[in-house]
Length: 293
Ligand SMILES: C[S@@+](CC[C@H](N)C(=O)[O-])C[C@H]1O[C@@H](n2cnc3c(N)ncnc32)[C@H](O)[C@@H]1O
Image (cartoon, rainbow, N blue to C red; front, side, top):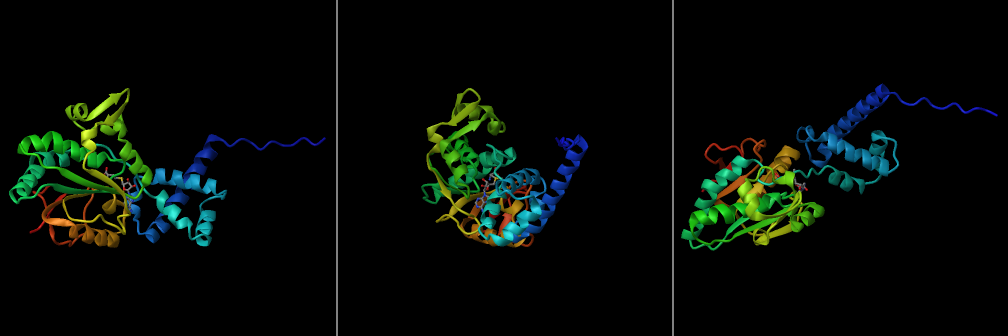
């Protein structure tokens, strides 16, 4: 009887080298394919490991041997581009993200906008949260509005928010309004206590803070909600992940939707393309712009 020779188990060193090679292949894949979907590598640099993990899972699911086989598969299956586009979506958010932005909104911007609307005979303030993830941004705004702005202006004025995202799973989570402790870590404790019901390590947003928020599935590359807005949030999406020409196209559409004197907010680590006119930085504050009258 022949004795079968067992293959030697891979050493820690060969596993490490294999991992480095996969990472390099993935980086090379992303640098080549991101521009074809109008994304930019600079935005993905920090998060490429999680994207590579997802790509690895997809390659396994398809029974392919690696990235070069996946390239071939993309060439032969045009429908795979849509799946690749989904794999490239990054969904990270938390309540009160970039705390300084919310502090200025609460102390100055929103009370002043509200007073202008009331004195002009208006009856609501309209906001669009684009790329709203699982609701952290629109709910942060509604919490701020009810607990900070309304007591400041001593008058009732509803804040209506249209919150859009491409990912229906995120929107479902947003509607459920159920969060882990870590997503609330930046929200001031007194606001957490007033706006959430706690059960163990999880928190559910209370009903009054969910009112006047409409969640909609939309792709910001092609769609925008109807109507005009006093405040538009578009943070950690367009100006991080999309190529510059696409940023300009989307920004043009966003600015058309913003009232004169309205406020446009991006992420504090983001910047808008050079030479854009029609908006000015608000009081030298990174991330906040005002539409010129
Ligand atoms: C990194 S998260 C940012 C969430 C939030 N704006 C913030 O700053 O915390 C990006 C969100 O944009 C959504 N998204 C990605 N591509 C999109 C698109 N083309 N149109 C609309 N939303 C998109 C993702 O599903 C995700 O929820």
